[in-house]
Length: 68
Image (tube, rainbow, N blue to C red; front, top):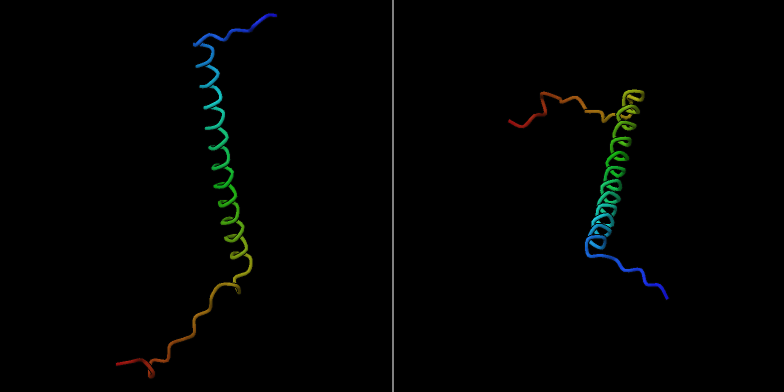
């Protein structure tokens, strides 16, 4: 029976690669979350430009009714 021996250096290298792969996946996930948030903000801004009536309206202030 043939045994495949892994050297300490090979083991460390594989562990580093796996660690880097996990870190890369975490960063990719965070980047995709941020890109989704940016897209949502851009869509809302574009909608606000196209539909100005959706912006909050302010009632005019009656100068006679202000607190003195």
